[in-house]
Image (tube, rainbow, N blue to C red; front, side):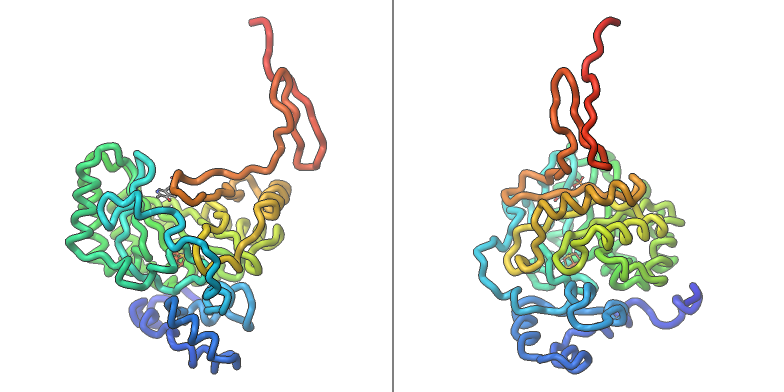
Length: 357
Ligand SMILES: *Cc1c(COP(=O)(O)O)cnc(C)c1O
Ligand code: SF4
């Protein structure tokens, strides 16, 4: 598809409104039973953009698993609904302030498509995440009054579902705060609604540098020509684009798939940033992959992917103390000598302290 066709076919707003939200329609399209879809969609919102829908090859495939409601979401497993204890770190409703120097500003309550594994699935797409203009103003006032905050991360929901004018207004206000050194945007639209990344949006964003964007590809089949155009436009606008993947059972819990994803991201000038171990959120347990397997995947990638393309595997434990990197155990002993295991599995001992001068 040429860049030009991509622009003229329809607007991103039209694409978003053409999204699939009706369980019966979904069931009919794929010839599956609508009853379970209806049950789950009554509890957690369903929305699949036409772009994502076009990527599903068959029920149960890695694209399907991410966006189609499944009964295990309704299992009451005792996991918390606010797994990261965000409420305790919210000085005002639209802000999550957990590290002294960084704060999240929750600017949008909706996403282009709803991921079944979302940590905030209990609140996403509901009024609980839709903050009023007054609450957003309170959030910005909090950031302005808190000089330790150097890095503001726009999230939600998906900030790029805001219309350009509103986004521009928010970015301008943050940009005007002297102690805010960088702004980050977390958005899945390059994956689910790539048409949203218009030339006009990129021009707008490029006025607020240093601005970073982290997106969220989980599977190599999401690396489509449309998404590649979206990422290229962002990179051409001088925006460093990173990727946060969630490790998901049946989607990307495989070293070959993960390597292919990360190499493909590098080709699109997107830098793999984090590989998130699944958060402890109610209704997502069926996506859980054991940490041992996550570590084995990252270890296997070492030999197959440029260091530039290997994300940091992290877990965000309940309680909200912050992300913890999980590393394969390559450091076997640390003392007078250092004993390490190489990518090939050999054990090598090297001196740790050097005497003399
Ligand atoms: C992940 C996160 C950040 C950003 O963390 P980085 O490791 O700097 O990317 C900031 N605030 C909260 C609450 C977070 O969960
Ligand atoms: S795009 Fe992100 S915030 Fe939105 S539903 Fe998916 S995981 Fe949740």
